[in-house]
Length: 222
Image (cartoon, rainbow, N blue to C red; front, side, top):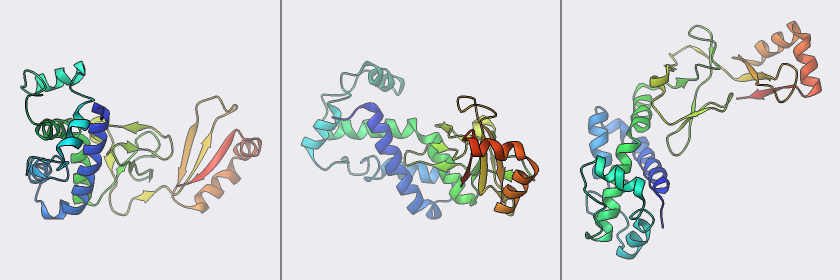
């Protein structure tokens, strides 16, 4: 059986794979979104089945048909109930279409990033435009993840003020994570575009070098 979180994760992963393969063939997000909606590899809406197996579809939907939160979601999309009277494959497809709608924000950001060729930067760890930017990684479910502060976001990065890295802008390759006295304290990040910048910083800050030796700070290569 699949939980609703399983549906979200599976649809997001399938959609991301489809976007990476097809984004160059789509003029804009509307066209890409329509392709995702009808793709048998994402929702099964094109043929009416994702699993091409009634038994597998029945097993999949068994985990959501009695979930009250899923019922409320179906209602928000105009359904009075989870349509269990339909064939299991139809219910499975409807669930995947709704899940696609729920993760579309992160998927659109993936599409926009691929079309523009520019990555998103972590606003907390980057030193700003004209400085050194820390690119966000993307996980299989479309979540944006910072390799320095390890924060993750399930929304469009632009919604929380992130900016896209321009061509030629310095990108972080090294970082110092400094707990400023005790490992339990929150870490302060210092990022550098190259190893020379890291070495120069440590030479100019012997107190940081001492904390590195004591285990209260650490360097990471990104």
